Amino acid sequence: MSIADKVGESSSFGRSRSRSARGRAKALTEGTIPAYELTRLSLDQVAPTPLNPRRNFGSDEEKTRFGEELREAQLAACVAVTRDAYLKLWPEHEEQIGPDAQHVLINGERRFHSAVHVGLDKLDFVVRDDLAGSRQDFVDHLLAENLDREDFDVIERARGVKQLVAVCAEDGGDRGARTRAAQRLGKDRSWVTNQLALLTLPVEVQMLLSTSEISERDGRTLARHLKEHPDQTAAQLVAHLEGAKQSAEQQKEEQQRLLAAGRQALAQTDSGGLPASRLAGRPDRPVSTR
Image (cartoon, rainbow, N blue to C red):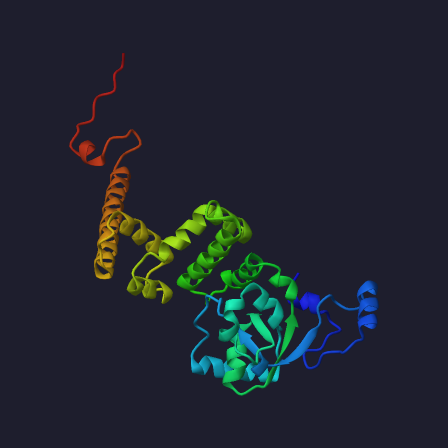
């Protein structure tokens, strides 16, 4: 179920309704309000989680454009957990989130940064402490929210997968951590392994992956090559990739040439299977009367 579905049609993005505990319990029982309601939070009391693998939230121009759209209408709420729920999981992050943060952002950091960029004071949030039941739950949700985003680059995703594998190892040991992470993400273990392999590449190559100058498929190829040749530099890896692509292109051209030649030969063959060139100088045989 989407956040919009949970919020329900009766909720307003411009304000949140205050209810007594008794009134809210009754409304929940009757099904007249959703399980999660919107609340308006001051942005100076919200801190992004240091765990978010996403680092690129757009250029200043993009933040300005998106921030002004948020000023007009916020179509999707941000999701946060309370300070206490977050620090219960990661007490070592207390200094990073700061003393003023009463909530920690789990989803909607692009909205958050864009709003701050254009000077907005508040945004609409859904507070979901149930997403902070365990470290695995928190990181799983944090990563799942970003996995299918078009602007979530390959290396950011790989870092997020590594983070989830790490918390799975903390809870259940290194053995089987990748499998447990894969199950949480609905992926194969090999997919998780391929993601982690991308992080073994030199930083320069990772940057090319982040900017899509090198495809993820080519990145996996380079990771396998690097495993066999661990001393190769970024420049050598890129040169190897270019050489492999040129060789593949040459093979493809040769296959196309052979295919074209075969088609041409077929076109010159008569219905009996003999090339027309052989039939041209062949005298007609008299038809036997016997």
